[in-house]
Image 1 (tube, rainbow, N blue to C red):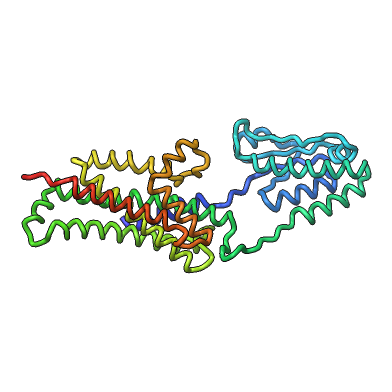
Image 2: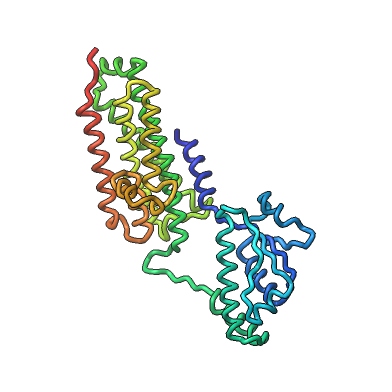
Length: 355
């Protein structure tokens, strides 16, 4: 229950946060300084394969050997400098969004080049001087730390994505582990415990603490190890990492409460498994653990504002943006209050069946 979820989470997070590098094929039939410079720019960002006229470009795209293929026909640069509205031939799978970033990059680059060509008025020397100035001024980016954040937006996005998968692992781990209470009842262990000096409160408290401890260890191990293994960071300082762990512990408490409620109100293991799937999957989907909440309809986002996975990710995001636990007090309070309410319902309104 401890090792397997950690390994699974490591695998999922490493895949989800892995930087995508597209495979781009270039057939440069123009062979000018402009197209050569463009190819050099592409090589800095993508895996570029130089093609020949004998290559079957369409087949390579269809068979997924290339995400995009670009063909610069003879006279491409000369026509552009002359003021013509030229474009490179682009090959990509219809209806696929895989090669869209490459297409957008090429489109932006060519659009700027055409404006420079129009300003050069057919003078190739002026055009190339303009392109040199454009590359020096446009493609040099300087990153500066804002406040005590220390993380770029991309780092924070990767961290939030990984927290979604951590929530997935913790939720299923705890709900399945608390099902041991149901198993004890069905096998008669609970009845035998009732005739010993062990109190019912102690029995349930030990189950809850054991499940919470396992989930807490899982979260602490993942937050500590993941930055060393994959491209993800949980803050610029050790203090931020510790705050993320605290947020995970608050969510672990909610997971325990959900698991206990399922086990208390289920009569058979089949019913418990069905309820676990029926409850956990919507919580993860609506909370933004599998995809950004922003892509969901507004009405669905409003519903998601009242579930623990949303509070967990919002609290984590607040901490990652440098606002600390004080900035996430509301979400943490929601998680703790939700846990307390669910535990009260499970133990006060659900009484043991008399035998």
